[in-house]
Amino acid sequence: MASSSAAAGEQVGSQRTPSIRALFRAVFEKELILLRRYWFNTAAGLAANYILFVFVFFGGQEVAPTLIEENLTGIIVGWFVWTMSWSAFQDSAQTLKREASWGTLEQTYMSPLGLLWVLVARIIVQLLFTVLTGLVMLVLLMATTGNWIIFDPFTVLPLAVVTMASATGLGFAFGGLALVYKRISSVFLIVQFLLLGAISSPDVAATNALPLSWGVGVLTEAMEGGLSLWELPPVDLAGVTAVAVGYLAVGYVAFRYAVSVAKRRGVMGHY
Amino acid sequence: MTASQRRPTETTADAAEAPDGTTADGTPAEAIVTVEGLRKTYAGEEGEITAVDDVSFAIGRGEVVGLLGPNGAGKTTTIKSILGLVEPTDGRVSVNGIDPHETPAAAYRHVSAVLEGARNIYWRLTVRENLRYFAGLQGIHPNAAGEEIDRLLSLVDLTDKANEEVRGLSRGMQQKACLACALVRDTPVVFLDEPTLGLDVEAARDLRRELRRLAEEENRTIVLSSHDMDVIQDVCDRVVIINEGRVIAEDSVNALLSLFSTQAYRIQLADPFPPAEISRLAAFDPEWVDDRTAFEVTLPDSEAFYRLTDRLEAAGAAVQDVDSVQPDLEEIFLSIVENESVAESLEASGDNSSTNGYRESPQVGGGDR
Image: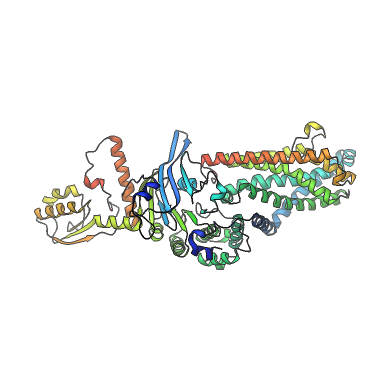
């Protein structure tokens, strides 16, 4: 470390190979600290989401009890995915926007591991925490509706992560927009409802390219039928993965382009 | 020296190298940061705005260099261009021979920065948690950085506050925490942009002390931008003065202080200077004090000093004492910047009539002194 290397002058730091493992450790540690320190914020967010579901579920039972009964598993899975995907979108878009305003985005950009690795580390760690909080919500939803879905975690968790990845990709694209055009928070709210629309879109081939849509369909199928990952149609698995990779790639490219525009305009650290 | 527009290669090649690794004019022999013909323009509502215009300088390994300039001079744009955070319109920059715009990840093994005061770190994390995170961001395992983190906390005098959230600290402590987070990245070059910005007098003095300690104890290249002259004078070996996007002076702090102190004199007379003879000294632009028994004057060379004493003798004034005035860096800076503006406006108007030897030379201390 520098105490010894400082004496060596030019040898300070620059001779060491940066470790990706160290980066993952640091990102995980930071997210865990914030989750524990601000658990009340997370709990309040979950509670608000749960109360909204209670209104929708019991209100729906009054208006159209048969419809709710017939689609209950789909509703639960859809709500579960929507909760997590909104969180995934927020984690990327809002975090990038906030970090630009805090001035920490410039520091993040200045990692010798490269921006891509830092973002990958964040995506993985944040998705992990999002899935954990999503599972808490899922248990609450099942307890409230009395509809206990037996699911295989080795099927549901990877599917949920891959499904949410498209929301993360969108988050990067919108986070990039926020770097260039600073006041677009209201657009983020609209995206929340667009994601809801994508989740509840009809299960037809034409909507498969939408974010979340195909993934929610496959996830519902797996949970309703108690299917394992290897029992699902390979075309569906490949398709859901392709959609996730596509949105992540487009989101990352859009974000990089926005960063280059922000650098040209000199506004990357502006707020 | 004024209006230095030399290319770094010229400065290093043309001047003889001193034992401390600098050339005779204070520029570095072995540059770790180079800026060549840097230019940055922005599209404004009323046309193109030039923030930085053909800026060139070089910074040697282990140097502590101050980037001086008034608000809006182009200091931050220059720094962010060197750091790869602002895309230059023209010109080249390099850190340890690496262009951060071409290979940013490689360049960031060699450079870190504190930008714009106390931003840049996570206010909801403690000081120690921030240090661990920034070590990780640099690819250093947070646990492996433990000892270094303790050392840095001690260096910036934050050991007692290590486990407090940054948002609960005073502004001065927050800025010291930012400084420690830049240092934990363990790079040979550190940029500090306006480290004392927004601090009260006491906090600024405290941070200045930490920076001085840092400059003495850490064998790193430090580039410090500020319009707080005390910081620059206290901490830096050399200054690059930027005004309106251009480098207008570049020299060691000591050389500037020495150059200006030998040009500025306070002359004490035995008796008040006769009012009828006052026009004899008009060309020297004296600043009278104490009922015309003394005056301060800036002279371009020794010839001018002899002409002045001749005129005093002709006026019947007896010189009792001559003192060389010791200006501080702030006065020198103001003098250089103001002189640059005067020269520019004269050039623009094509009027050279009032550009005599005295006005052309940097003036120490104006009416505000």
